[in-house]
Every structure is written in C-alpha cells, then in structure tokens.
Image: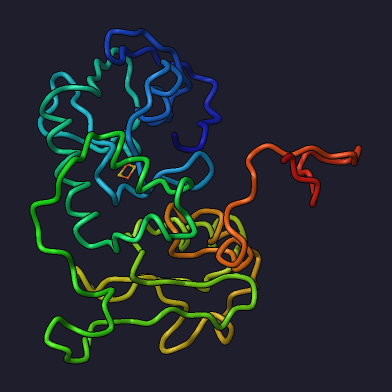
Length: 257
Ligand code: FES
C-alpha cells in the first residue's frame, strides 16, 4: 500500500462491499489492503510517500467523477470504493500495454526474472498482447543499422549496482527513496515523454554523483533498472534461507539448497 497514517481519528468506508475502519489520512490503496484487497500498483510502496505516477491503481468512488489513483486519494467517512470493475480492468490493461511496449522483452535472461513487479503486474491485470510497435530507446542501433541517438547505455560506474535506463518505467521510487530513506538528493528525473529517465546529476555517472551507495534506490526499484551487480553476476538468491546466527534472520551466506 502506502505509508501508514498516524492519526488517532478513525474513518469507516466500504471497499468492494467490505466495510473497513482506518485512521484518517490513510490512502484508499492502504484501506483496500486492510480489507484484504490488493489494488495493482507500480509506483507506490509501503514505506515511501505516494507519488501517483504509474496510474495502475485507479479505482472508482461512488459520487465522484473519473477514476482517481487510490495511492494518492485519502479515505473519507462513508466512502464507497470499487476496485475491480470492467472499466478499471480495461484501463489497467491499457496502462500496462504501454509500459510493456516500451520495455525490453528479455525477461528470460533478465536478472530480475521472477522478482520483477512489472512482470507480476502484467500478469495481475491479464495483459496477453501488446498492439504497439516496440519502443526503440533500448536499442543501440535502428533496424536500418543506423546509430540510435535516443539510446542511453547502461551506467556501470558504481561497483555495487548497475543502472540500465532501458528498463526504467520512471516510477520515481528510486528518486523518492534517495530523498526519504537516505536524505540524499542524488537522483532526479530528466527529459519528457519517451525520453524521460532517472539521472544521477547533469552529465554525471553514478560514481561521480552525490550517490553514497546506500542501496535504497536499488531496493526500491520494481524492475531491473537498478540492480545489484551480485545478482546480475550470480542470479537471484534462493528465497528461503537458513541461519545459525542469533542476531538476525537475513541468513548471511547460509543458503538452503
Ligand atoms: Fe498509484 Fe502508481 S500506484 S499511481
């Protein structure tokens, strides 16, 4: 969902027929999660402030026009929310279709395969075909062999992670994580439309930027745009781990086979 509200005042609403009571200031997305309903999302997380950029979490609210983003819409007393209508399903598929049309289709060899929220959401909204011509930003050369002036190569300057702009969906989670988790302002969004992308400073690579290699941006990224080099080199770690250490549950290098 989105970060929890600290308000002591409670508000009751109905989501897909289920009544739920949450603190005032809670987002409709988080209230839906409290009611056991997962609204599809790409740019919202439980820990960083909602931004409302991906438009996947649209809902319908009785008495209101349009389809507001559930992550940036606060609940109100007596609100009646619908998250699963045919209209919403069509809108979400349309949004995902555009994302996928501008994304490299290399899932089988991608380091994030099996741990990619874009992949998960394409499945969750039932996307089965893409009607648009693939975007060309992620190819170094065009079909006629000419150099592609819009292509931006990977940034491998940081020793711990790699930035691949071709896989960026510009959800700005990394920018917000850098600011809110680390308190650093190393990242920004530059360009417009198909050319918009995350940048680590004007003309700078990650290593020479203000980035302190804390990894908050890598953790926040829903795709393989910002990916740990260890995962690129060795693949996804096993999800279940065992540990003999009494101090944490991370599992260190003790991997379950
Ligand atoms: Fe709400 Fe992206 S999750 S707009």
